Image (cartoon, rainbow, N blue to C red; front, side, top):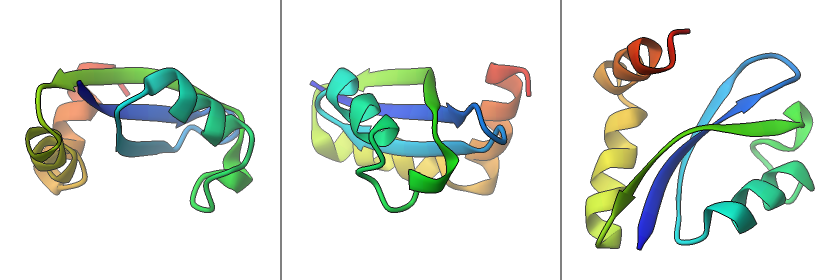
Length: 80
């Protein structure tokens, strides 16, 4: 299984969207500062995820979340 996820910085509220095959491990990596993009904004909490059968499907959804329409979708879904 593959997951597209959204984590939120508890420091400043920013969102990070990503793709993984292990949600627990990936969140731990974000909170240990092992991701250059998220390192300065720890701690992070998981606020949303979706599950996919293939990496290709997950990648398409991740790209959507990073688009203008995808950000609007997340705003409504996450009530932010």
